[in-house]
Structures are given as C-alpha cells and as structure tokens.
Length: 323
Length: 264
Image 1 (cartoon, rainbow over the protein chains, first blue to last red):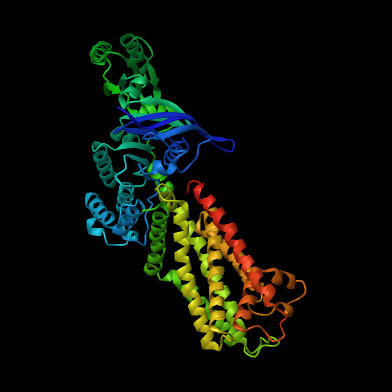
Image 2 (cartoon, rainbow over the protein chains, first blue to last red; image 1 turned 180 degrees about the horizontal axis):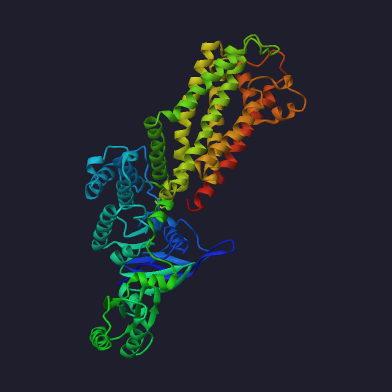
C-alpha cells in the first residue's frame, strides 16, 4: 500500500527546547496513524509541519508525494486540517462557514453550496444550518470544524486532539464520523492524549514524549511490548502477602511484585490460564482465601504509563484547563 | 481561470466575510461611527467657545478634516483586534492550510476594512457639515481629499493587520492600538495648529504623519487657517510619502508574518 504521508527526520527546536527530535513516520493510504503523548510531546508540532503551517529545522515531509516544504500550496489541495480549537466563524451560520471554505477551495459557488449542504446533513447539523455558529454548543462546533476540514474531500486529514473538551456522547459522534471517512479511504494523522481515542481509531500508534519516539506499532504490538499478561492476587490481609509472593514466584518463575498497601501480589506470566489454575490450587493448599484473583492483560494505558511515566487519559480538570 | 483572477476571487470571499461580520455584529460599527459624532459634539460644539485658533473663522471648519483623519485611523486600528482574534481562535491557521495565496486573505481582509473606513469617513464628513464645515475648493480637490483620507485609512489598516498578526491576542492588540493611536492622533494638528503648542511638543506634532495628512486635507479643502504658512508644494508630497511608506512597509511585513504565524 502506498504511503500518503512520509516524514523523515523531522526536527524542530524553539530556542533551547526541542519540540521534535528526528521524527520519522509513514502512513499508508486509507489508514490512521495515532500520535500519542502527553502535553509538550511534540504531537501538535508534527501535525503543524505536515499541515504546512510550520517549517521544521531539519527533515522532509511528503503528502501524496508532494513535498510540503517546497510546494506547500500543492500539498494543501490534498489536506484537511482540524486544530485543537474549532476554527469556526462565530458570526457566520454553519452553512456560510462551509460555503466560504468551499469557495476558498475554489469549488465554485454552486458546488460549494451543495457540498456545504451535503456535509451539514452528514454531520447532523442541517437543523442548525442557518443559525450563527456562536449559538452552537461545543460538540456541534467541533462537528462543524471537522466538516470544514472535509469540504474539499481531502485525501489526507490531520486532526489535532479533535475531541478535547467534549463530553462522551459528542466524542463518540466525532469518532463515528472519523471512522466513516477512513472507511471511505481517507488517510488520517491523529494527534491525541486520549488513549481510548488512539485505541479506537488508530491502525498504528507512535508514542511521543518530549519530541522523541518512545515506541511505535499497532495497539496489540505495543501492549505485548510491556509484558502481555500478569497474574495477580488480592489478599485479605498483609500477613498473607509473603506466602502469596512465594507461591507466585514458583508458579510464574519469579519476578513477583508485592504492593503491600493494596495487599496485592502480581507477576508476569506466559501461559496465563494454566498458571491461574495452579495458583488457585497452591493458595488453597496453603489455606489462603484471596479477595480477588485473575489474569490482568496489559492495556495501552499501561504502555503509556510505562513509557512516559504519566497517566494517559487527561483528568477532567486538565481538560477544563485546556479549553 | 487565471491565477490572478482566482486570487481576486479568494480575496472577495474573505472581504465578504469581513463585511458580513460588520452586518451581523453591529456593535463593531458603533465605536467607529459614534466617535466622530461625539468628538465633534465635544470639541466642535461644547468647547468651541474656549478654543480659539488664530486665522480661523469657524472652528468646526478647521476641526473636521482632523476629526476625519482621527476617526478613520481609529476605525482602521480596530482591524488589529479583529485579526488578533482570528489568530487566537485558529481561523488564520485554517486559511493558511487552504490552497489560497496569503496576499488574497490579507487583501480581502483590508478591503472589508476599507468599506468600514469609508462609512466612518462619510459619518465624520456629514457631522462636520451639520456643525458648519464646508469645502471651499472645487470638486476635484474635494474628491482628492477624500481619496487621501481613504488611502491613509487603508495604510493604517495594513499597519493594524501587522500589529494583530504580531500580538496574536485581542487584548494585547486592543492595548497596543490604544497606546499608539491616542498619542499619535492627539499630539498632532487635529485639534489645534502646531504653532499654538508648547515649544517642546511642537517638533513632535510637526513630525507626526497624522499632521502631514491633516495639513494636506485642509489645503485641499480650503480649511487651513489664514495665518498658516503651509505650502501645498511640500505638504502634498509629504502626506503622500507617509502613506506610501506605511503601505510599502506594512504589506510585505504583514504577508511575511502571516506565512510564519506560530501556533495560537
């Protein structure tokens, strides 16, 4: 499959701070690449470079074979961009917002109008089409913004935290629209701090932190990288943790870790189901009745936490502070 | 369609955006349209009894060209706030990701400013006429005067676009416009001739481009005081030179700034 976006060795510095330290990525046509990372990871910088908004200090970037650094205007014909904030004209109606963008994409007046109507329908905005955008709630503004990025039916769409500040329902609505575009063959570069967003939408994920690539792969490959499955047991009291640790070490071949506060003992395991049966048998023989016992499968959250040392999903307070 | 025609159409689409905004948010026009009326009431009517200008029979007649220039400058200055808001909200980033030349976006923007400036100039002139101001020259000179005012306003609009693109937040742009325009329009010959000012202030007022444009207007419209030594041979080129210099500096700098806008 041909690559719609190819970036090689992108470097961007702001004074002494390095926003991107040699990012390379390739996004095959019709797939989604998620750039996942905490604040100041370099995600937005990468998106802005691909979107022709920012020149890197080093490196190259092609969109559908067009060099965005030497021929930005050609590249823009294939690109639709949604920034972190909805870029919507408050005093224009939803229809006028989209029609204006269509005209600026040189679709012609009639085509721009029909395209605006089509997108308003598809994004469930038809009822509000002739109301000023300032009256739109956050979810509708974001949908209008996303519709604006799709006016010229671009082959490549760049989304920078498209659901930041939205409630769960609006978020799911945006995800549906994005998934639909990808099914239609659109290539997507998605910058997000939301792990479930990357998990839901991305075929490939690049984990970034402070401009460096920490890991890359499919969600499954990434979870496998940090150890796959773990056997864990929660005990009724602290005294039993020592015995449980010994048993787990024997069953799993060592590496048991004890969390005394939580009366929790866990250890990585290769053959989880078999080991679980053995663990239950041995605990029973030792007269220990666990509060909880099971196989814990590593999630992307664990990957993210391990790689960046931070929780992946921003708290509500973080979201509010950002919006 | 040729590239130029396509760019002209892009400029029209962005100009229309600015015009629609003025229509949808009339409060944006309130200050530009009320300001010349209020200033004429204050200076031309309420204070006219205590303001004496040597060689001037009618103070509103002397004042109106100055108020026109001041009103136009303030209206054009508000473009900085608008542009900064567009930067802040990511609108300019969206335009920058479209296959549209930067010049089309900024020229379109300033065309809508020019329409607002024309409206302000019309209100200021009408207010002056009501207060007693008259043009004492022929129609060609009268038209040349209005053309000079509009060109001056257009140049200030471009400077304001540059300020808006550089400061990037509406609050910072508003403060900058206020800090620049208040001294520039008041330390000038808008309200009184330079030679009635204290000696330390006079050189500033004389070097002020606003004074140069106001002097040229008064000469064109026959509103210069009888005692004035202003000479059309030097006054007109000086006013035109200021306006041309502002345009020649602001347009390329604004386009350069637009191409390299940092993240909002």
